[in-house]
Length: 276
Image 1 (cartoon, rainbow, N blue to C red):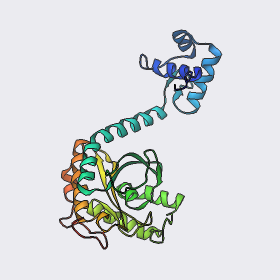
Image 2: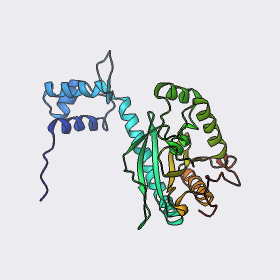
Image 3: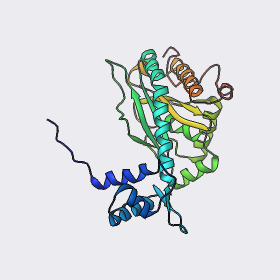
Image 4: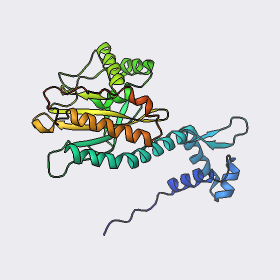
């Protein structure tokens, strides 16, 4: 029998306070204490903690509390991730069935990629990656489909602040070369890691998933160099591009803007047959 975990009272009270704002835009400390029948000292401590972490903001003149910017960001992330997973999952499954390779879905925030969904082929070798796993921004083709559409100043700040990590001998660590590759990704509409830049023995092709305001997520097909028929080739690139276009359309992107960036003959990963 699983252990019974008691609810944490302070967390419950914090949730009560936050949910009170579903009914009204702002409250004073006294109003919240009265409405929720809380101890004033306890409520004051919780409110201060929430405000310190920007889950609430407090007007310096009226001393009244409102929902803070941290909740806006979390709400945006939750909406984005849930919607993207729901829309992308059928296409991911179809890509796995067609290519017999693992397909990863990821988002980008604060210089890190986060894997938010994954579909693996049944009965065959597949890449080891966990949902929730975070990856550096410069990680092979996956990172490039996000950075390629960031403002150049943001890319410069990322590189200046974090550098370009050398994951393998093939990793691009020169800023000029890396930015030239980002320009190529924008031109083609997809990114390829065909030289084992991020992981030895692994090659990948990645496409951006667009929303009305830009890149929402990235989709990556992963194969192994040790298996000649398992490396993402021209067929996988075309399938990824088609899936990315359909998903982007469902996410609200203007796909006519994407059409101009797609080549008739996609770049083929080194040493890979067009049939893959």
